Length: 144
Image (cartoon, rainbow, N blue to C red; front, side, top):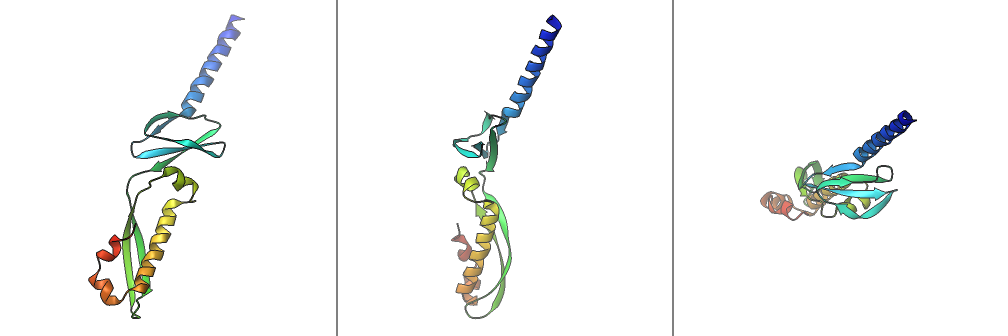
């Protein structure tokens, strides 16, 4: 009888340790944790450090809050004066609201890339070749 009780206690202790390990998460200084409980967004965004979640019910998505540098592939376009040019660029962006970045957009990094390519083609189409060459630095600074 005592052996059975000890076995049950050991099994419960092991199950508790496994459950605690499954619930433990670490969010790095430059990240924020967005928690979903049974698919619904929880209002509290987890800050950096140690955090616990309910292992079966909660999912934690980490969002990088650093400034991201993303190259924009070279885009061909025709300027307003009918000259074909090939232009590449670099986009810098930073997530401001981690919950909105995860919930409002399926893949926010891909969305930023596509928006940058579209904007680059639009700028090429609205500019003359002389404008593109003379305002090389200033034409890219206005993007956000």
